Length: 599
Image (cartoon, rainbow, N blue to C red; front, top):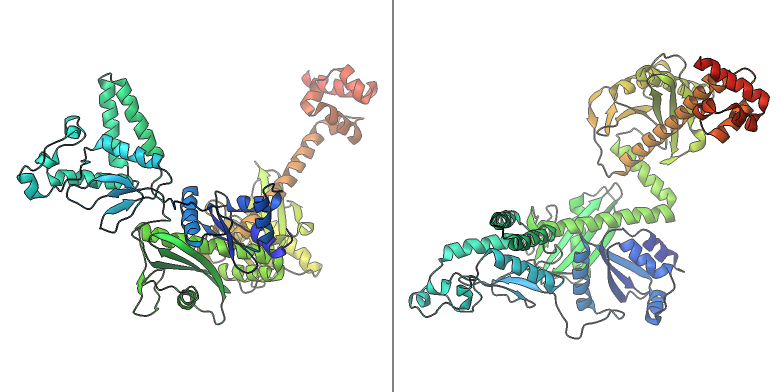
């Protein structure tokens, strides 16, 4: 890949399902594709040699990769189809018959019919879908037919014509598939209740239908009708595994613009989705730098005007997550639930992914800007008086009070500085006392830094709750460092962050970068402490066994452990086995030592 900018774009793509779009250097759309994993799929174009000539040509022309994130692979398939039809990119295969995906229609009429169709007619009928193939449609319709008796005829079932006995029941009535509404054998209210239940099935709410299916299955089983019971069971499994219609396309959402915003201290990230006839036809995300600490509302209003002008949108309605003022001619909706809310959530998700990708790109292209932004964010999130460019974290490690140790890890500019890690043997504390141990190591650490006139950290983190925090604070008080260093505690269970003198903990967003860095610090301190503790326990275990045998030195111990792997096996070895490793004299001493202990 010759283009460094393109390489960074590919590296920072999300691993979510979605649709990718390739553009050339003149901003012409070359190709649209779908992917279960955007990063993996797009990377494959550049990581291998292509035998197909057209693919080779396509790859050489790609200058930019854009993408739209969606919920599922099915959503990606549907969105890809819509975008290809609208833009007709040069390298995409176009269907000559312009085939569209199937829908299920509940016809707007008295005693509504339900049937599959590829055409959406704006006559007030309800359409559910689209579905990726007719197999899914037919499965659903078969399930519905098995539950409810619905008419299939196209008669005009007006009250006048039914009362005039204009129609006669057909074969469908006689074989039990229809209840004969055409002759007045079924009333409209009962029929409509069935339609309401079917509507819930098509929306993905199968609770009532599953209950009825299970009852049917049990009835068949009790009557020894096992084949019928098996058929019902298979329908239940299909229903339980079925995923309802896509959130990407909904025919009721037409000619609407969707905007959302995600922001931080310095930038706002605005996503724009344009919907026409129930389909997403455009997705664009942009970054706006804050000049005067503008609010999300101000940034979003500016972006709405700018993007609608840029893309020539004349939609009369906007879906947004917050209230905005963009003039009286445009209807502004803040959806709270349903399909409208899902489409706004999808826009927000695309804005979030764009922000994450920009962070990754900045980290590669401009590390200084990345560090500056990260430090500013941590200062804000943790309410610190200055940016925490130097952070230290402490953790105690002991098991049942044995071999108590502690660890201190150091992060500079949000990254581990491993050469500055320090480990401590607890000297003044007897038994498993985490509070006293914490006080000792914090005191020793900063006493030494003061004596050596080394720079102090801006932030100290202790692994634990209020007790450990109080102990660390006492050590800082004894050194006269209160107010010069900020100290906080992090409790493991709920990731609660405690401050001195504040009984109410701070909870950071689980996905925030600040919390991730704190968790990284805590985990590093725990790992470093545990490793040191294991080393100390192992050495102590060896000291009490082999090193206490007169005439047996460290080299002999190491050689024995290399061969036998454990002290237990050395105890059980014969003189001959020991002699082959360390010679007869030392083998006899070891053998006699363990023999005397057995007696």
